[in-house]
Image (tube, rainbow, N blue to C red; front, top):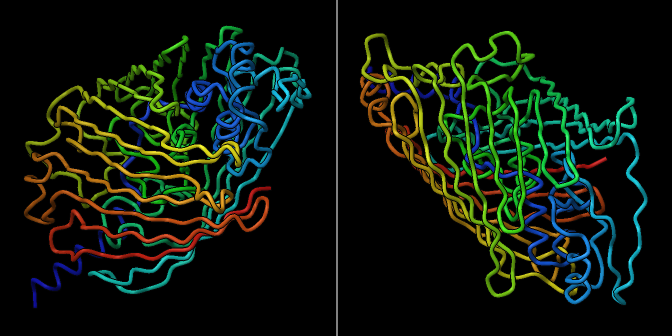
Length: 474
């Protein structure tokens, strides 16, 4: 009886503290990279897929517009004019022309000096199997995406200011089944407020190179990935798929991202404060814990005439000790532990995103494969390896809909597991997520979701969670 009481107490503590603990992303990929992926097809249909994912005009990260026009004429007859996802602002100039079926060129109107979009999602989820109580929970999140181009504040339009307020409410099943949050939209550090504000400035050069700096919501970068296209409001819902944790890059960061595209490659360098800046201005503890750096190189590929991306990223920081600002109390090692005594973090990430099919009758729609693997040097990083593999895209008969199926696996560093084993036995966490999104009307989507998770908490049974999400884009 005493053991059962202690087990229930530990389970309750985890539900309170582990709801949103894994931060950062293994991507090193961004909206311009999605644009490069689209450009590699040489088709306006792929350009439209970028618009669908980013919720903005299709972007060009330095490819030759004339070459794109020539290739597009032979591969696509129209563009997709119904973007359904808003994530990150366009940080490179839009394509200068759109090609019609006859190969003629029509110049789109110039983007307005300012634009804004609001995305609101409501969630209901309930664990139906496993150790968690079968309690239905309601929650929601609203994100605004505001772009102030240079011409609106006295500069030229190579400059852009992005303002990103966000607000969440309610309760989800995060922490009730697995350690990795099952609802990305409700992801925030333990004890944080329900509101945050990010502000970043982007400078784009005519070559396509861009520099973004300020306080950056990394989920926006993750949401722009081709095929995955998940940002909490759309696509996969589990954090392990929507925002793959690295335990090095925080979920909201202060820093800068430099991107340099070439004909075949896209190079990126991130410099950031390794501490999470959620709920902060970014100046309170600027770089107090050290400096984080990520370098990435992405190679555009083409298999069977379909576009793809292979990305290699190296990420590290000079931080001493674990990321205590995002590690919940239940997983924090006690004083005198072996874990957390090392200085410096390092991890390597390899990811691939490959389209298998694009539908000529529905430009910008299709489906593809997503895969990612990361390994770290361990202490003081609390994840030693992780990965996922799956498929996602649009059904051919209903291209306005979307589906996804993926498997993920995460392993906590052995030293950390050993140090906390006396109070919380943990092991690897793995799971499967499947979702289907119904495109009900323009700007309205309803998603059914199921997650089967073998929790990292050793005394928990494998859990099944059912969920529904209603998303509105205004």
